[in-house]
Length: 282
Image (cartoon, rainbow, N blue to C red; front, side, top):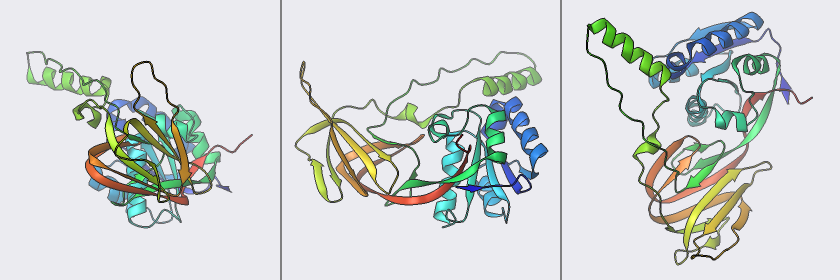
């Protein structure tokens, strides 16, 4: 693991959703980073400005302040520009951070910012699909549906009051997720192949398929066959470097995003493909 000196120059990219959702945590993280290193702070207003800031980082070490979507966006951009090898990415989670925490990033702006300053780069495996998409943590078929957000009534009155109210609602309400628009999943007929060997074929309905990148250049695959009432069947387990799924218009969840429908998708493990700054063990 490569360690970093606090004299390193940092490019701090603050995701707009983090600024709107939890400005106090953003301020704390920025103060801790600025106190420990030379920082340049970028406040992109959207994905294009986010990408432009990351591309123009120069020799600065990029630090993303944001949620899991912002982390995946940064890794995807670096992957598609073939810049993951020479870039040690860091993240201070603000917002939904289940993925970041599962990778070892501390919870809380102070602990996460200190890990950026005092931590070390750890090289992690990456799943890359045949459309150049990436998976950092977990892949699920079919995606899990979440409850849709209820509409919020805006009070009548002066325009400035309505504007302030909408701003407050955006700040306090959870971010909408694309999972809301996904139909409730049901049994699927899929052919799952791992390194060319069939794990389950189209004649066997399945409840779920999960794929997780591990260490050492292999992915762990679990297939849960559909069973009848009162019947139990152990999940089918496999491990390999390539995973191909074939079926009729299936959707899948990769980290925090839902993609599809597609009829065929292949994921390949890239060993130690990307670097994330994490606390030093012990």
